[in-house]
Image (cartoon, rainbow, N blue to C red):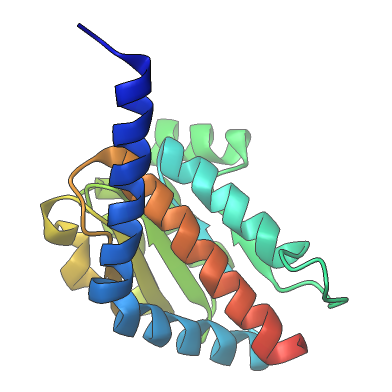
Amino acid sequence: MFSRKNFIEDSLKESAAVKNLILDKCYNDIVKAADEITKAIKNGKKILLIGNGGSAADSQHLATEFMIRLSHDLDRPAISAIALTTDSSNLTAGGNDMGFENVFARNVEGLGNEGDVLICISTSGNSPNILKAAGKAKEKKITTIGFLGKNNGGKLKHECDISIVIPSDNTQRIQEGHITVGHILCEITEREIYG
C-alpha cells in the first residue's frame, strides 16, 4: 500500500544521496565548467543555454540567475546569459520550416560567437536538437558544457567539451542535480568576478 510518509522520506534520502555522489563524481568537471564560464564572462562573452521540456525550464531559470543575480549579498552588474528556449515564434518557425531538430543549432548560429559558452541541458544526452546545437557550437568555437544524466551522459557526453553527468537514472534526481550544479556555477562566477 502506498505510504506518503515513506515516499517523502525515500525521495528526500535519494535526492541527498545523489547530491553526495555529485560531489564525489562530478567535482572536477564542475571546476572545469566554472573556469570556462568565468573566463568567458571576464572576456566580455556570453552564456547560451538550451534544453527541452523541464530542461528548457532549467535553461530559463539559470539564465535568469546569471542575468539578474543569485547571491543577494552582492551588488553586481548583469552577467550576459540567454536561454534559447523562450521565443515561441522563433521556435515554431524553425520547427515548421527547418525541423525541430534544427531549432537550437539555428539560434546558436545566429547568436553565438567564438568564446561564448553553450550549456546543453539534457537528462538523456540523446536529444537530436541538442546534439545538432553542440555541433554548430564547435564549428563556431563556442565552448560546450553538458548537464547530463542517464545512459552515462548519452551521445552528448562525447560532443561536449565538458560533461557534468549527474550519477542517477532517475529523471527527477537528475533535474535536481542540474539546478544544484547550475546554482553553484552561477555563484562561483558572481563571487570570483564581483565578490
